[in-house]
Length: 351
Image 1 (cartoon, rainbow, N blue to C red):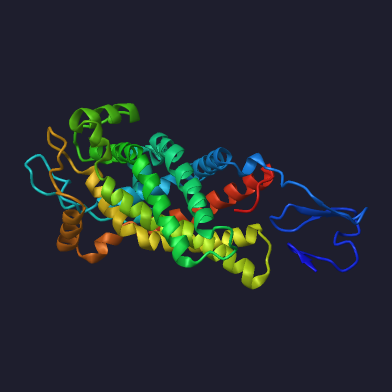
Image 2 (cartoon, rainbow, N blue to C red; image 1 turned 120 degrees about the vertical axis):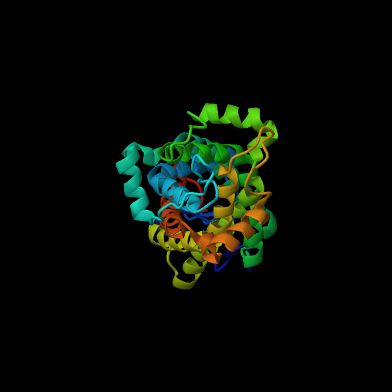
């Protein structure tokens, strides 16, 4: 006779060590010492709660962001190269020498100082207070809702959850992302002989609000949200799908090796899908504005996309792809390893 997942064979189903066997999510437990089947409620663990998951994801993201931030700064500088914002005092477009990832990074160190590689880290960390926490708990909630107690979780359901979680999280975090981009570009403006626009994260925040009002904080939010939806489709969906695929096909446990392989795949897919939208987002956020906060270079994300392709070619949409990928791979690896390890140490179930 089968009761839940416990098979009655006339012998206790528990191990000979006297431990208690729990049948999946069922509340039925059998004690080896007595052979009796008892109904006991499954204990609620705080580590699986909404707020604990939120805080752990923010902490893990802060670690990953700090470690890989110089690559993000380098990527942003690369994506701005060639756009119409670089003009001289007479209004003529400057022909800047294109530099690759390594040359850009070493140029920042030589011309501005090594610590400038972390310029803008403060608003980046502020962003993760909202972005990383919201995306993880939203994805987890959508995943549980769509699963509805079933073990199987289809790819389209995972993709839908990833897109929804990423879009919502990035829309809420867009103001911090806008401030970060403004801070990141100040070093380049000084080298071009232009007057600095902002001096700190707080100053950048005030300037944005004074020029465009509160809604000015969401300038570039459309391509920003589009990018985040694509990135999280690559990151969350790929990580979740690849992790469970590897575990199912190889029989490996939920271990560091599985986390590493899954996060590497997630970083590659996320970079491939998100880089074009990232280029558009960065250019719209960085463009100069008039007194009302309206952009002087691009009317919107579609116009920016068309201008970029028309003036610089299709592959301009993949400017900064190498640092994006090189950053996303270690970022994803650092985040997921930290996230899973912290959860495990707190006693939470596998993600």
